Amino acid sequence: MISQPLRAFVATFVLALCGSAAVPATANARTVYDGAWSVLIITNAGPCDRAYRYGVHIADGIVTYDGAGGLISMQGRVTPKGAVRVIVQAGSQWADGSGRLTKNARTGAWKGQGMSGTCTGTWQAERRS
Image 1 (tube, rainbow, N blue to C red):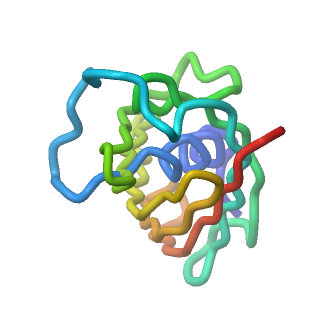
Image 2: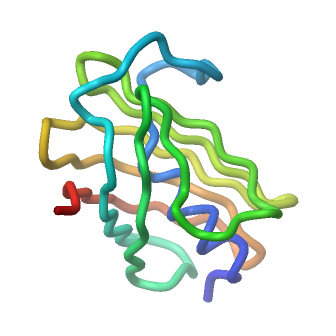
């Protein structure tokens, strides 16, 4: 079972993904991806819970978690072409996700390390109304 901090961490990371290893801290301008999103995280392998759903917000291409996350460090962004990458860390636990967005939906993959071991899976996101 995944710990609560990693669960929140995984949820946050899954949304902000881009193709390079480094995630820039700022974005240049508003993007068509800005707004509220609902993200479904699915575990395909490992001791993590099977699925989670979380809210994420994108502003100026930067992804942030809608929940309380005082112990969670998250960096993520969406490029103008829709490539997304998010890295989330909570203590020694971490998750790294990447994928591609369209204007109203997105998909991608994630991997992470929690207290119970390594997990991998996919994620799906849709714009909230």
